[in-house]
Image 1 (spheres, rainbow, N blue to C red):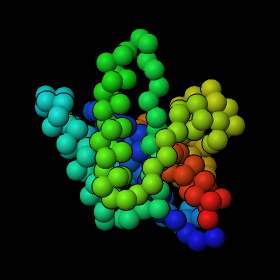
Image 2: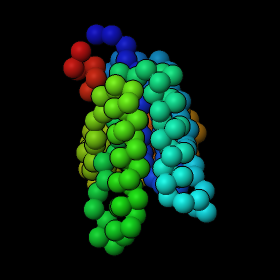
Image 3: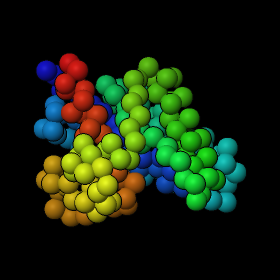
Image 4: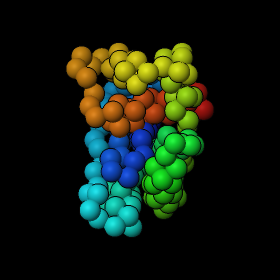
Length: 163
């Protein structure tokens, strides 16, 4: 089984978490994270363009084996938020297609189940598990970054079992 590079993405219109892990299974040789931020004062199209360009640049530079993105969930209480997240997912799907990188969509519940063993785990539990796997002793902030790292770890594990 060979080493892989996996990018995890936690989509958001204001803040999109992006994490890169390199390794095999849960043995991670290198990891990093960042957040792509957009200004609320900008039109939605410009915000989406900013996210698309940033993702595309990373995909073309890193040539990952897989991208894992958190899938949208229905927000009955906040449908506008669900729509905004869906549009971000769309530009990420486009960037992955333009870069010829396979992409996998994972629900929040599935990510929590895989990483913590509990599909209803709190954000804090998920973040602590990600830190434990990566050997990080300080909190990973913001939440979008730790969520993206969790998604990347799941992708690395799944990629390892495919190869």
